[in-house]
Image (cartoon, rainbow, N blue to C red; front, side, top):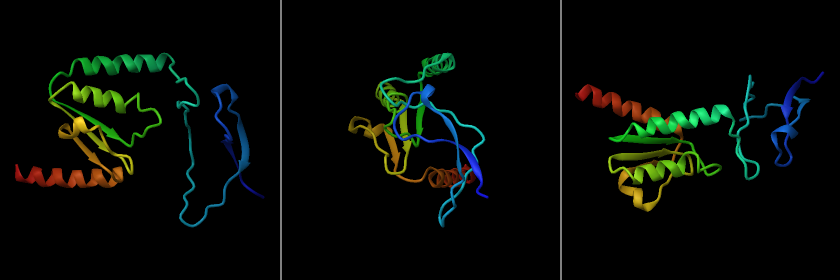
Length: 149
């Protein structure tokens, strides 16, 4: 008897109210694949010209703006794995805030999609690679520097 799991199967963009949870067969794990058991998930991406902005989103957005407004000195805008699906949420504001603060640094770690505008080149560090591997290297460097101090 085949094992069954719950899944949302999308064949085209859909609004939240059109998403249906279905029973499907658990896929056969092939060499090089991993089967991941998901306990919970959420959807908050664009499928058209709208974005999910509920009360929680607006409260978080206010906290974010309040936080940034109180940081006028040195600041690191660290972007991990952000692509161009919704660049207006993280990427573009980080670029703008870095440009407007000469003491800011923009750092991006992204496999195959690390970069920044040329005018930010002197204030940026862009690493095209695996986030986990990059962080492991940074930790090693930090430990070496710690021994020197």
